[in-house]
Length: 77
Image (cartoon, rainbow, N blue to C red; front, side, top):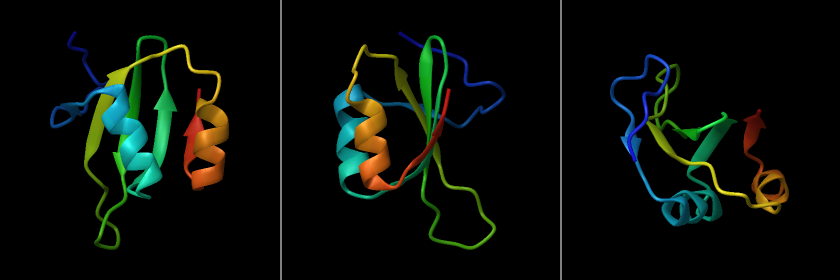
C-alpha cells in the first residue's frame, strides 16, 4: 500500500516492525500519526539538516504512545 506523504517526495515506505525497531534503536526524532499513515522523521546527524522521512501504515497499537514516550520521540496526531 503506497501513500502520498504530504509533499514529502523522498519519503520511503517501511514496515511497522521496521518503524518500531528504529524507535528502539533511538533513530527517530519525531512522528506524525495521520489517519492513514504514520510519517516518521529520522534523527539527523547534521545540524539544521532535516532527517530522512519514512512512512508506514497505521496499526491499531495501544502501546505506541507509551513506546514513543519511553524512547523520547516527539509525536503528534
